[in-house]
Length: 122
Length: 107
Image (cartoon, rainbow over all chains, first blue to last red):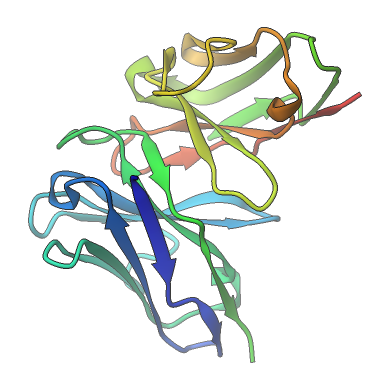
């Protein structure tokens, strides 16, 4: 079964850091670009970051550029989102997702994890 | 920017649902998708490339459109189709943009 499982969410004070992990199973992880998307009732779905299969090829939304980094460890089938200098408006459910087709960029997101909640508050 | 209309669509099972998404600038239809989201669940890909159903998606779901105007049609609503639907463009790489959503609820 194709599956993505996120972890690492929680409560963090403003200015703090948090690292989210997303572990994949059921497909050849190294062949697919991966992405993070967040969701709040106010803003809806917001794309955050993506990492392609090509080493070093990462992309970020303007709202997180310079504060968040995305990386992947293909040996562990895991993608990470390192979030620094967190602000209250980063509070959201964070989903990781897989881009649909083998080594295609850009593409739709066909498999999503269950989401992990990040709350930035003192 | 993607704008979806209506914000809420109140319908009954068996009805036809027509959801609209308008882009502020032209988008290649190759880079347009629709998602369904139910409460407490992650979004689910329905349509990609504007008109291609994702694997396992029933044929009552169909997508169409080009340029700045795209449509998702549900030919006959089933009870499990009452949900929120989002459009997405991924043509202005590297930015991926979602619309605000259309809620399909029971009349």
